[in-house]
Amino acid sequence: MVYTGVLTKMQTEFLEPIQYYLVFENDFIHINQLLNKSIDIKRVGYQCLSCGLDRPIFRQGFCKTCFFEKPLAGDWIMRPELSTAHLGKEDRDLEYEKKVQLQPHIVYLANSSNVKVGVTRKSQVPTRWIDQGAHEALEIVEVPNRYLAGITEVALKDHVADKTNWRTMLKNEIKDEDLLEWKQSLKKYIPEEALPYFIENNKETHLHFPVEKYPEKLKSLNLTKTPHYSGKLVGIKGQYLIFEDNTVFNVRSNEGAVVELQV
Image 1 (cartoon, rainbow, N blue to C red):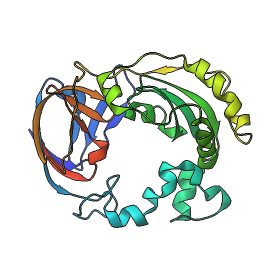
Image 2: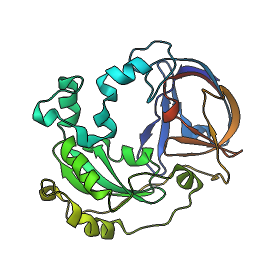
Image 3: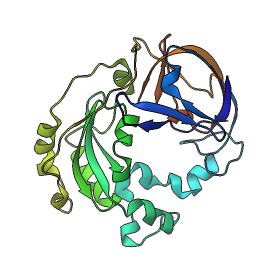
Image 4: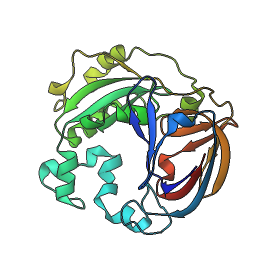
């Protein structure tokens, strides 16, 4: 069976284990069903996720023009402390920025390779944790806009990591942590404006991924450099496909590639 479409990040369901889906314009693939099967991936072009044109992808699935001009790629996406919609100030498109920034956001702790702090819209819990390959996570504060979440993350990352070691995450070299204890120890560093939104009573969320074999020595597949690859799928974690030969493929970092996928 051959499927053709534009890569976007895998859609997920929070089940036991996590369920993964690739969604193309005319096809829908349940990736869990492909475990222990050989998959052939071939890049046949590009399609910017914003303008839809066949242009080389610059970052985040966008061509260079769209990355620097469209609101979907504003600096506040990666750095939420730069959000200004709560002040009525436009970055690239105020209406879009209000829609995204002026909604409940969560500052959380997640343990993928180590304990880290992060920010996501409340509507993206637990999707954000799944995408990061976290095996446990816990909300710290729930604030009414992205700016408050951003300044809280900035304050906390002086005392806890804000990055995931993707190699450690994929090798499953992890240990359980007491995130409730971490939360309480970090409380004193939360900015005064966000402290009223501290979540006093909650429990850790635990996530389990469909992986039959973890890689030992990682080989990262990038379709720009290697447009054609075949291998046996043995796991899915975060936004990565894990193959039997230790090749790992980050679907999200290859967004915008037009592929032919043969099973």
